Length: 183
Image (tube, rainbow, N blue to C red; front, side, top):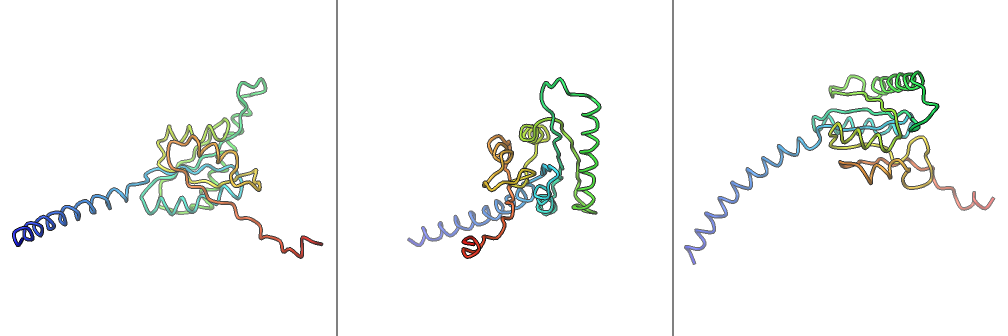
């Protein structure tokens, strides 16, 4: 019995050293969990609320941020005109530059600005895949804020995203009092 106890103690000691090494490796990996955070923006106040939490995560994990806006383009449209597309891209770049200046200021995090032409959900998923984003941070609703739990774009991205998606809820108006409803 004494021999077993000594052997168990020796074994437990070696596990303890091995466990410390595993914890150290885990901590090192944990700091590298997110290296690229994608933040889709549609020009709404709701979507822009995702910038600050994304910045906080980027600072914590040493990640870079990509601010993305998708300018709507109807596929195979006869009305598609290159000058219209160019103006849309220019408008999108100006919008993203303004968001970067207002929301990110002098942050020490690398920030890329990307303007895509297409449909929002598909373009966001495609950008996440091509840029190898580790996380998408976005609002549950954008310009079409509704009473539903998720907007249609957020729902589609949840279904098709190649990485985790952090959805930030839209603040709901306070519930009206029963007495107010009876009037």
